[in-house]
Length: 467
Image (cartoon, rainbow, N blue to C red; front, side, top):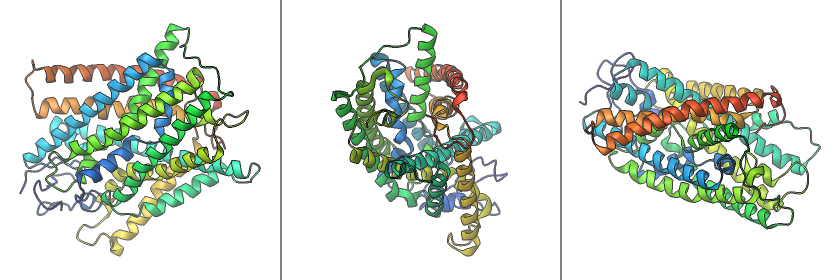
């Protein structure tokens, strides 16, 4: 029997077999953990984990990358994009090594919150990760519903310009579809959906990039101006806002839960999944950011699709191309909503299900149906009430993804694997931590500043999504 891992939720130890067959077994007399057994069941391969990770990172936020370049210009923007890509790959590999290190010593962690609490030896860290991770996941779920509904509204308004349906009708439609799909009981059961998600992100990236190139070459293209703001302070704020956007685009905050889906032993498998994911990132992020910024320059909007479909004048790309891209985005948003709901579902299942009964027994099926539907109803209500997700992206990146994906991994590695304090790795890890604590603080300020400046556009239960 493996040693106990910290579990503040259950009020005691939760034992996870480090070399078993993928079944998480509670200690005799301890509370059974249905969240681990049902939602985070460990049956997957490295390519399944790659599909999950790609869906968690490579989403429609890739279409905000030209806007991130707008805040920094060509040289600094592409340099920052490359550095954040390299740092996040490094950080995720470090976190995976910490998980492998713990597993080799009989403590296989399947939750970010328990990993942080065990390695850092602090009960408050457990609750810090719970709060930040839950905030991120709920925010992404709300944003996925809102943006998916916006995609449907775009298609609807092109077919029926004076139709009676409003944004909230489409939000309800998306929520109902997600409520149906959310009854898939485990993270592992999303593997086929997430493979389709990978293909979808490649598809709309190619379509949108082709549309940007066509628009940039057309006679209706806006004048190409890549100049930055004349105000030094404005340049600084824009640069840090752009870095916050990059952090949110590359962030996921659920890598331990994704690694938990791997059949044990998981050692080494996550690196293959990271290589798969970053191969997709290398294509989609650079193609989308370069083509979009090249076509529209400093006039590019926060979502490059909006630049291709201006409010006045004709669309800058064929309707069929834009319609197909929007459809691909819509379908992938459903997958993203499912992936980022898994942590919430795991917490619900842990506290409501009976692990001694089958996952599809009436005893467990009814609470699952009720709780997951209520969660999505809450997310849908918030999406309808606060339709200004675009301005929140930078704030989420600064205050959410930066602590979980840029700061904690290097701290946990330095503590768990204890490289010599004078070693290049220890010094590099410490420098990354200090740098991104500062970037997070300044980025949060810049993002909140933009939120305040744009507050005049915000209206509760508006029929328009504010970018």
